[in-house]
Length: 74
Image 1 (cartoon, one colour):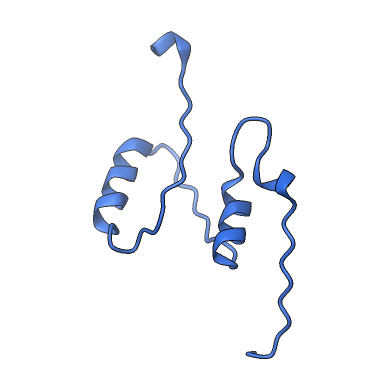
Image 2 (spheres, helix red, strand yellow):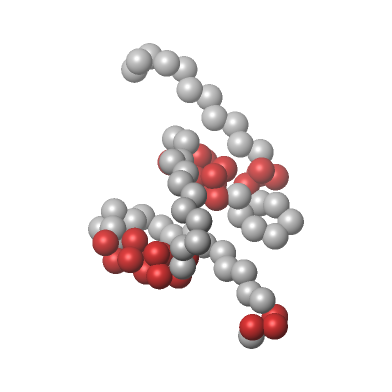
């Protein structure tokens, strides 16, 4: 396994779309491994983010995030 040839080509257009960073492509480019993805529906993302940030603070290298704002909710 140590002798596997790894070639990584990520088009810059794949990292950024019209509005947001593509977190999966950015993760692959930064860490050179595919990210693990989990979807948990009906979760308060802000509360979950705060808990994860606190519990795993020593393992977090950088945080890349985007937020969606609804104009009606100000």
